[in-house]
Length: 503
Figure 1 (cartoon, rainbow, N blue to C red):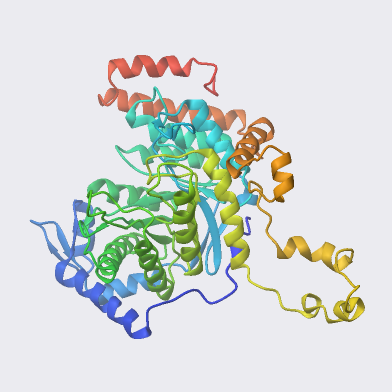
Figure 2 (cartoon, one colour):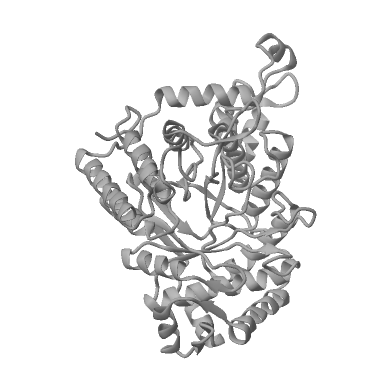
């Protein structure tokens, strides 16, 4: 099992106990007075049979406060995620923190910073890099890209899921659209792994049928259900942080009630993918400090509920390049979220929103994750670390600690050393080609792609199962008319390419 990092001090909290209770009561008021729309007949019947007031015409559900609080209490405070390789299992909850990637729709050209559609090889290479990085513990949905060239839209998520299974043994997540989760679940089951399954409300206060159906399928498969909220403050959510917290919490709790009514005690986790609006453009304001304020109070509320937090809007930047702005926006938000109690966080690779991604950024992010993880581990205070006997032994000048056994033992334990940073003195830097962190990250990526191998390759039987499931999905969408003749012709040619891993 992956140890991750353990937060060894009280998390950052900025709400008083009275404010926590005020937010909670306001959330219960929204659930009962305003209600949440569910466009799913089976869910509406389930709610009605369990004491909810259901407006069948509007498909709106009003949740009694007692039922909401009862369902919150039923969610386990921790649970285990099974990975394809047991050494990569995650024990999720408590003060344990794991780090994962932030996906992107396209790759970017490192010279022009313009987005480009990734190739299959770039997608597979991106997974390989994530699998090799020390502090990357899991892979999110759509990883690392939403798909790659010459793959029909309806197959992009499934092809990406297959790429993760083939090239990594870490815990993985997926999304849902056009029933694709049916095939994602089957692929994960074929290799004996759990799947991070999500069910996302549409802001404000609405669950569409595909989100509900996905939740029901994940519950049936025994996979934890992630409930994530993603409003835009000032557009689909109130402009205020407190108002956005209330509406987001109400959306999460509505999904938790659904989960717990279907299967009491089933694992849930929650995440917040909410951004303020850029009122000059109407687009999400990535990288803003208000996001961090929302994270702190969101995390405080859900730690108070005792439910694991799948932090999400940690690091998308408004920058389009790997530059200073990208660095400070992601590092500040990521650090604050880690300090305020999230159980998992996303940083690796994602550049501008979820629109662009690059493995070079993932390598740089591994250093940020390592630094933040080291900070979370805190300071060890013991007779050995206080080192009174050693201090007495060394004494004043000319005493020194460089050649002591204590230094050899403790220096690497106490200090995190980044792998893609410029740590040279000025003369060394000038003599060695004036390399930047970007240069070191490029060299590290080349080394990873040349040497890294997945810890447990798929067996022949497992690979046959993955390919069989993909073929079933291809036929399913072809028969439904969701893959055109032109798309099908190009797609079939890609499966005959030397770049395709099966065949």
